[in-house]
Image 1: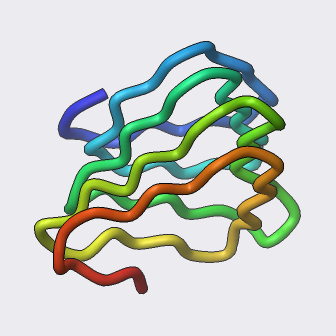
Image 2: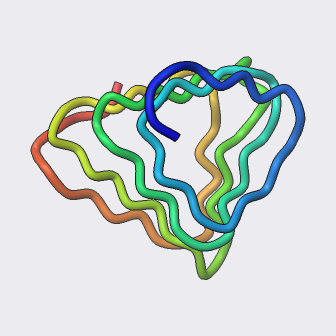
Length: 89
């Protein structure tokens, strides 16, 4: 996903995801293999939903700039890899 806004209002599971957009909504997103989260991407929620990285999966934060994570829980059972000088807010 690149650009625009995605409103996720139901739980969804995907195998792989390249992410550089805005994700809003009440649903939980589960990525079962690899998620590449690029600078400028924003994941927002209502405080009750999650981004789930299960055992055996990988979240790559590829940050030349800032990524935004607001009112959502990161449920990490896998691996998180951070590269670049960008931050997280």
